[in-house]
Image (cartoon, rainbow, N blue to C red; front, side, top):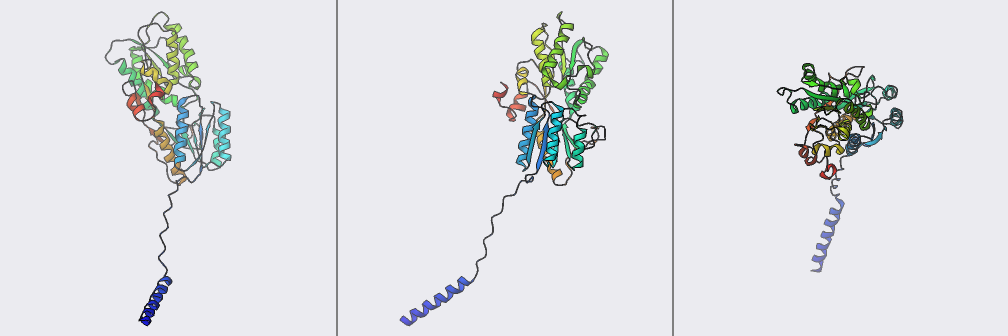
Amino acid sequence: MKKLFALLLALCMIFALAACGQQAAPAEAPAEAEAPAGDGSLVGVAMPTKDLQRWNQDGENMKAQLEAAGYTVDLQFGANDIATQVSQIENMIANGCKVLVIASIDGDSLGTVLAQAKEAGIPVIAYDRLIMNSDAVSYYATFDNWLVGTTQGEFIRDALDLDNAEGPFNIEFITGDPGDNNINFFFDGAMSILQPYLDSGKLVCPSGQTEKAVVATANWATDAAQARFENILSSNYADGTPLHAVLASNDSTAQGVENALAASYTNDVYPVITGQDCDMAIMKNLVEGRQAMSVFKDTRTLAAKVVEMVDALMKGAEPPVNDTKTYDNGTGIIPSFLCSPVSCTVDNYQELLIDSGYYTLDQIS
């Protein structure tokens, strides 16, 4: 019996040793998390100023989305000073940015620094404001700026019922900075709708100020808009003449108009006033009836499209564009992607701005 037990024990040991000699199949290595596409590459983002709320939103939205895609972002604001923006872009180039995204202060003032970018092989995406007279501009990302203007013009047409009402109706005009190429599209788009009514006499401009160069506002500044409109009111409406409409190209100029009206306008007829950007500060005016509309341009949408364009350039692919005919910067047509703007009024601001998460209700109360 002892011999049988010893034999069994010996056999067990032989089998155990054999099993130990066989190597187990290696465990499958855990899959590594996919790295963000950007792998830390540096993208320079140059915004014109922090003085207007929309540029803060644009810059921060783009920075957040680019960083989420794996890029390192150098975001700079130019304080509405051309020399400062040029210096910031020079530093971005020197620091090794792979792509530049630029919303220019003055579209004609970046030729020299962008020549440096072109020499370094850095693609340039003009953001919202077309950079003029530089062959270094690779792409343009913006909203459909002609549509912004026609949306404003159509709103005034419909609010005054110009096709049916007898009239005449008094209107004044104010647009933005003459160095911003976009005013050509904003103003000309609106005037493509309104000019026939001016020609027929259905619309009348008591100040006589209808030329784009005359109604421009340096830096889109609210105080400059207010000062000009105070002069218009004192010269043309002090006797109680009604003002029926104001074509204002954006919210900061509209705010200047509204400030001037609050100070010295006495007629019971309050004008239909347009705007653009749905600035947080202006929304109270819109809700309370001091501004009739603002063109909403969701900067989250534009920022997301710019991230797509940057990502494509980084990968050596063609960025998405949907317009290759409209935007000539003086050196040729710049391939562009145009996002669509939307009219925002007291009737739909809740859906557009609050329900979408663009603002909280507290921010615009």
